[in-house]
Image (cartoon, rainbow, N blue to C red; front, side, top):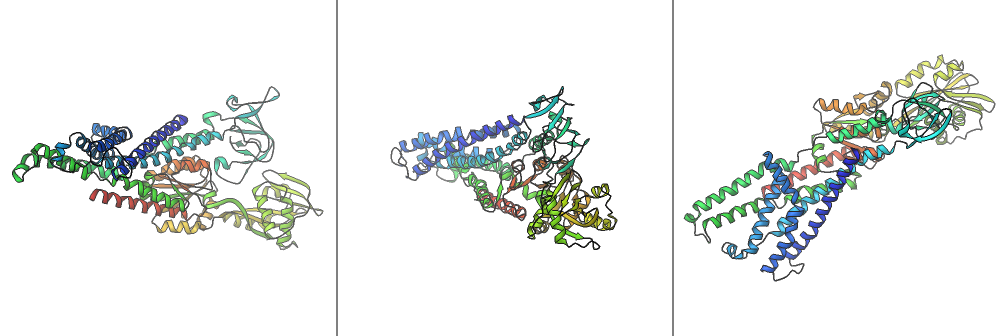
Length: 627
């Protein structure tokens, strides 16, 4: 279904582009010919000259503009009028009047001595409206790429153990219960449970959480995530459409398919304007046909004169600026947005932004950097060691580990200009920490479980450990020769301007909600730092789209701001999806607005720009219709 949808979008895009480019070339020749910028056969106003304009305008009207007639017919059958109706009626009036003037100039000359034609008007309206539709079709075709890229995350082959032999087979041939072998650095091919070995797994591609998750036997792993450290054997469990990745793909498909189309502002105006204009034209026709001759001396028969009045009302009432009203405002608005690093997909997005009352922010990678940094280095007063010395020993030990917490310790030592020492007997203990020998001393750094297993007394640290955890930090205990020497704490850092951006959004009258897969302590600590009162924590990847649905069911108009693959269903499900350009391509393609810079003030900037652009569209439409 996803591929068929993508093919349909691409076909629509090619068709609209071809019609726009063809009508643009013909309209340019018509316009320049009317202004005598392009030589056409015969002098201006002659039969040959007007016939040339007729020949050029006909394919624009009936080939490029065919969709407006189809839309008008569909509206007529269902009893409504929209922009298609207005464009079809207005351009048809201009085109058919001009065609009549070409072939029956003597009839027109009785009323209009100059025999004016309006082929340039009809052709330019069709062309400019097609330009707007091409830009929107191009934006929509990008959205379907999200599903294709999600599918590409699935490994093509898996290494399985069957009948005591190791063999590589296509993932599609893996069956539930198969023993799958995964080496360090490889992408896990299917969902399953670890049977032998332990490792650290990078699940950010699925969950969006940057910290690798330590895994041991009997614990589950997700297909498409990356095995970081150890070799392990796993039992395949969920395959094909039952896998977590397949569920995310399905959620994105369903969200993109179920998103209700926005009724365009111009359509709402046209629904009233078209019947009124046609009604006025009919009244004018009846008035001049019935009473015109008794009021003034008519240059032609009452019926012909009334018919020309009817057509004139339609031509004049059809807002020629209408073709420019929306596309030009969108082009200027999106162009200004591009200068600011804000990419807006189209007019529908602008209309939805105007209705927003709630912004739902993903925490990791959106409000925070998604990588831990050292926040505290605390030493035990009874142990004669200063913080820098403790950090040197810890960094020396962690230099051999790829864990993000280990890399944070090494970065902090480098930031302070400290040099590491040689380490021997290094041992990484997945899920616990690391240990080794530095300058003849046995040192270890890890969690409480590691210290308990080593018999290290840590009762004096319990209060400080709990205090750090309540602040959303990850505490690590450092021991020397079996004695606790200090604590090192790390935390994901809030992005610069994040608090300012949240405050600006709240000042605009918007409710800000934060959503995270983290525990309550961490999520609430970050929320408090940012001034966000409404915090949703321990939300699984598939739960983010459900949270969007919950908010929408409360009558809220919701924008989702995220950057990860796991955010894609929620971005597609939200009324407006806003993705960070520093995030994944999949998130960007599932969204309606993409922010290309890292400054979170671009979020209120994007909303303000959208509001101003929509306001300009309304002004343009007012003057187009009013004039």
